[in-house]
Amino acid sequence: MKPIQVTIDDALLDRLDNDSEVIARGRSAVVREALAAYLTTRHARAIAEAYKRGYAGGPDTELAGWADEGTWPDE
Image 1 (spheres, rainbow, N blue to C red):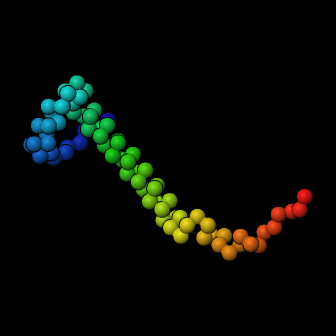
Image 2 (tube, rainbow, N blue to C red):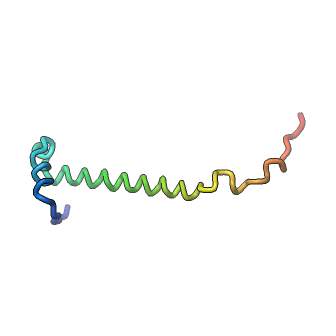
Image 3 (spheres, one colour):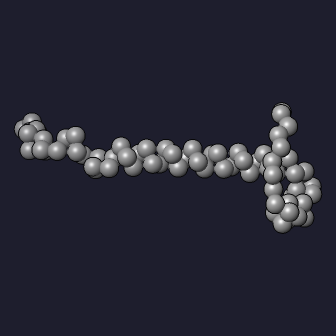
């Protein structure tokens, strides 16, 4: 692991340091977990946005107009 320096305002730091999980696990562990959750959420949102852009015209735009061209074989 690599140490980093982060600036946090006093009120937020007080809230962090008074949290029971932070007291039990340590500041760094909780901040690492929060950052990992943030990045996971961002990644999921980016994927969802890519799907939205990809299907913006609807899932069938590529095949529009072809519905009546196919026929089912008679049995």
